[in-house]
Length: 228
Ligand code: C5P
Image (cartoon, rainbow, N blue to C red; front, side, top):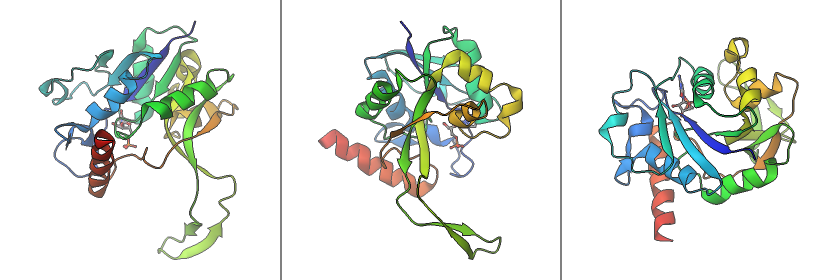
């Protein structure tokens, strides 16, 4: 039977956030932001390994007591997200048909039911799939000077989230050097092989902490889920 392995690329510098440490290590309810992310993945019964990929130069990871079951760390991060994922896959030692669920370290408001919904909908799929959200707002394309050039139909448009779940060997093949420059998520690399990943409805709260204001929102969501 295929295993389910969570792979969390966390080798980014978080330059858009503008904090002195990478955003995955910012304090959130007394823990590093990424602790919340890794804890949720470890709490999914079907997932047997939670593997975080950090930069070889990372100075922060060892400063914290993670105390998360199933957690492993690989210091093989690369210059791009795709390189970090590819290096992590190559170092995993997983079977080719094992499922890998790649999840952004900075999507810390993920929940166990979201991951279980993805697994339930994708486990029988030939290709794999991802959590995503149908676009709810009206979409504008901008001119280079910040005016509206046109309104784009939102019909059939989805915003990609993570986890993104694919077979280990196929994802590694898709992320081979050539594809790397053009892809910002795993699904795009799979699409470049001519394949069509399945879209599974995610949730708005599964957003990626990117700017300072996002941290307050993540804190409020995590605090209210602990109270509930
Ligand atoms: O920068 P962005 O928020 O899009 O990064 C998405 C995820 O990819 C983050 O978890 C980040 O740490 C990771 N990443 C990485 N290696 C890089 C760049 C980003 O693991 N070189």
